[in-house]
Length: 468
Image (cartoon, rainbow, N blue to C red):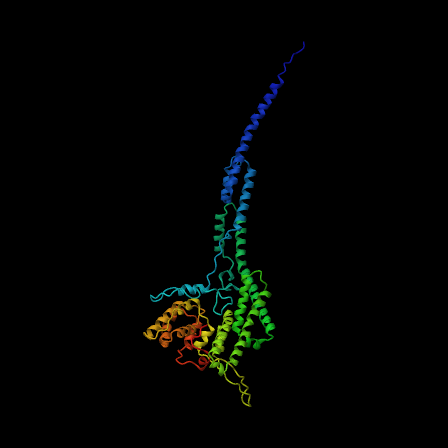
């Protein structure tokens, strides 16, 4: 007898299979979705997390903790990222801070009131910066701008055991995921970098000093080429101080202008420096041509004073006012031929001016001082000593580093001759420590005793009421 087998409906079997598959797939998709959501949130938070926080946060993400391979990889990534981050510690980009110059420090000290008396801000507070570096100037850009004895250039000793233990303890605290091998490697690398730092700083100093020496040599050679003079002959035209000022200016140019070549900087300043010997020769010519007839001609004297004022501007632009000042004070005398016992003495022409008159021509008054002296009116009456002390106190409030005390004294004298000269200088002497006069200004107290009588040079050169 044949057996009959009942077959199930084909669609029923398909539906059963689909249902079973759906029951298996849906929970997995839900897990994957939750894990993806957690990873997306972790990605958003990652920039604000350190490596350890990132690792801990990852373990809290749904589904990751159950996957050992993922946990291991996340730990390695966190460790590597921590090491990379630690390389950059201490190298955050910050706003650069300009170094305080010695000149600025001195300025702060000078602005402190002394003995209950306050002096106004001074020393170039409103003057434009000088183009040529002055002998007393400090803090300007230089090729070698570092102190060779600074702490970071000092050789360092290898770490002792106590220092190594301290560094290991600190590293273990900062990088708790590192094993002993990694910690020791990290600390050893840190020690080697610290020991290598002084050598690197010293190498920079040696390089910079070599560049400074090269600039100096090239400048001197260019000056020799342009003047066709060397050694002592070159110094006859351009003083050693002036050459040094220009060399420092070239170094400043190079430091301030990274795209400027040494050749261009040297040529520019050497050419500019040659204006001094040219101006000196013209002043010598004026002195040689200044005769007796010119001395009695007011028009001739006025024109000559104006020409000397023009020369003073040339000397002032390169900071060489002192050289013109010395020329103006030089007295003329005839030369003498050589004898069996004495060498020949060349003739010398000068103007023979008094120190204050020579300074008045050579040193232009600063705007602060000129604003004060412009207000002075001639006054025949009054207490001459009291007036002198008043002028001195006002000078103490307005004088700048570039000013000459003798030049200012003569300017006041031109406007109001009726004050006590000795009392004026005595009052300034009593204030010089409080005011903070420069070394050059202090030296003027030695040279600038009051001139109660004009020199013959003053009388021969200056007409009445002349102004520069």
